[in-house]
Length: 238
Image (cartoon, rainbow, N blue to C red; front, side):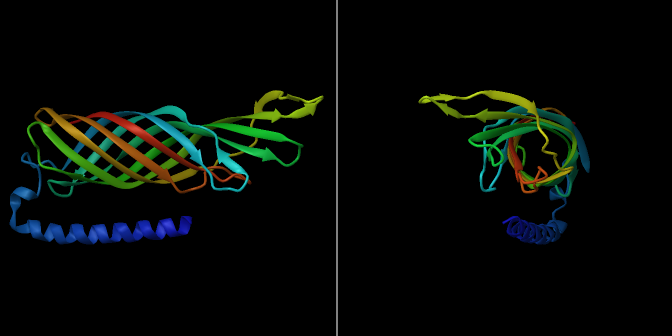
C-alpha cells in the first residue's frame, strides 16, 4: 500500500511540474506575470500552528485510541517561481503524538494502551498556488511533502487486566514507561488552503489549514503506525 502511494505521488508531481514548465514558457511574453509588482523573488515569515494529531495503524490486532492536541512553530521561506506560483519551505518544530491499543499475547485478557509524545524538526517542501490580490486578500492552495526528523519522544503504557471473579469484572490499571522505540525520520503528504491579508506593503497576515498524511512507520518493532495531523496555521510574512 505504501509503495502504491509513493508511485502515485511521484506521478502526480511529475505531471504537475510538466504543467508548470509549460505555463512558465507561456509567461515569457507577459512580464507582469513573472514576479510581484515590487520584483521580489523571495519572502520570509513566522508561523504558529495548533494541531490535532493521531497515530493510524492497519496492523492486525492494533488500533488507534484517540488523538492529542499539540502545536508547532517556526520560520517560513517562499521563493517566487512566478507571481502566482511559489516554492515554499522553512524550518519548524512540531509537538504531536497519539495513542494505540492492542492485546498482549503474553498475558490472558490483557489490553495495552500506549501513549506517545513525539517531537520533530520539520522541513516543508511545498508548491503554493496563489490568486491575484482581491481587495486586500490573496487566496492560496499548497501541497507537497513534509519531512520530519524525530528529536524527542516519550511514551507510557497502560495495562488493563480483566479478571473475572464470582461474576464480577475487576479491571486494575497500571502505567509504566513504554519499551516501544520510535523511528528517526517521518515523511508525509501535505495539503492545505489559506488566505493572506495585506496589512501594508510586503507585510501580510496568514490564516490557513493543513492536513499532513504520514506514510512512513514511526514505531519500531511489531507495532506499525503512521503519524497524521491537521493544523490551523497562523502567521505573518514580510
